[in-house]
Image 1 (cartoon, rainbow, N blue to C red):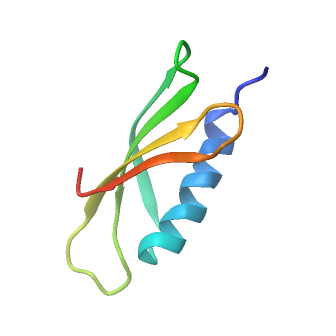
Image 2 (cartoon, rainbow, N blue to C red; image 1 turned 30 degrees about the vertical axis):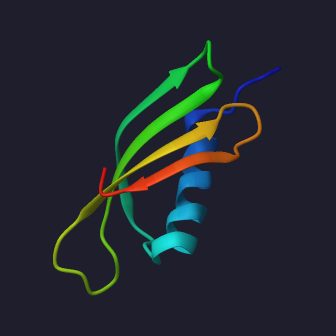
Amino acid sequence: MPTLSLAEIKVRVAENLKTAVGAEEFDIKSAKLEELQGLWKIDVEFKKPKAMFAETALFTIDATTGEVKEFRRGY
């Protein structure tokens, strides 16, 4: 089964960050495809609207379906 590209994963992260915390802008600090597990592990830094400081989050996303398996804010 084909895996989602990093560009496709970035779209999933953007959708979920906006829904979860209202953040629309973010930077991917690291991204790794764990092929044996079929998971993308993504570390992001984002800034909520009107916030003074950036925050971090970890996403674990299924590499074939794009389903978010884990979201940890402040990780």
